[in-house]
Image 1 (cartoon, rainbow, N blue to C red):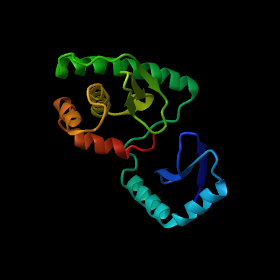
Image 2 (cartoon, rainbow, N blue to C red):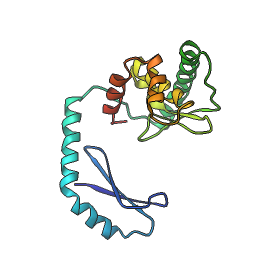
Image 3 (tube, one colour):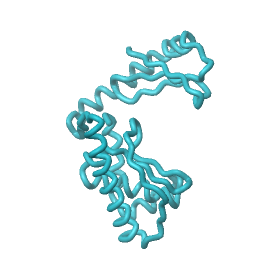
Length: 184
């Protein structure tokens, strides 16, 4: 098992994050000793092995479903521009067509995010992963709608999902497909 240890001022306790069948990250507070984190990870070895096996099975089952090319900096910059245009056009379309123009956002940014497809801040800023350009149109649209709806409901309550379903009636299926695309 390959462990990666990361210290952060934002972390309050030791935790283990598994994002794929190849990466196990042990996060810990700044003053925490790596030796103690190793002991913690060893105590959780059975859980880690089980979870890694689940990821391997899932990845094998959906192998080839959504592949994302490795990008150089120049590729990223080009895709970032394309993604920005795509996101802006789709935000305006869904806002007008399904929500009567009631959503107002401040900034739209496209980034190279490692673990998120998108986010919405309480200030009305929307962020999207540049890899949205590699998604099938229905998944890209779901992402745009998802973040757009967070402008009114900054949570995943029933009110939020009631907004999402207006533009994406099959959002549950799309959400599941997107979750399987972990190899961002």
